[in-house]
Image 1 (cartoon, rainbow, N blue to C red):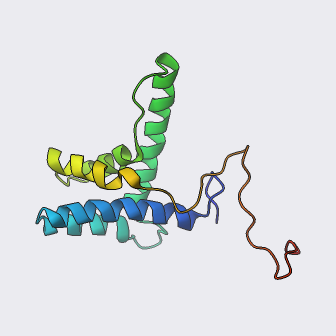
Image 2: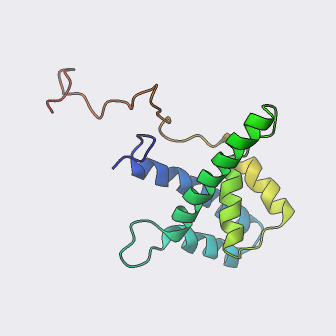
Length: 142
């Protein structure tokens, strides 16, 4: 099932999972296994009847709010600092009462600085990639 960017929902969840795993690794490296477990539960456990975890839902909401704020800020000052995906992830973790030291925040941003989504984002100007091509190179029959 695609999200509103045209990417499959599964790829978006995988991208968020990559960020969550990065934060868990940093917590483990800092010997904060208790906090790493809480991050794991936040992004992995789902309530009965839910398809996604509360962490993914909250992260998506935080990311949307961050993008709106960025857009408003950019209209006022095109040179203003743009928020990063990591900022939305850190906000999600903090909102769930998982304390983060400044060192952890800096390490998290450094570890995830090279993060690249598995699939490129699509927009109205760039259609999504074809789902698959038949064995002889012909497009699939709808």
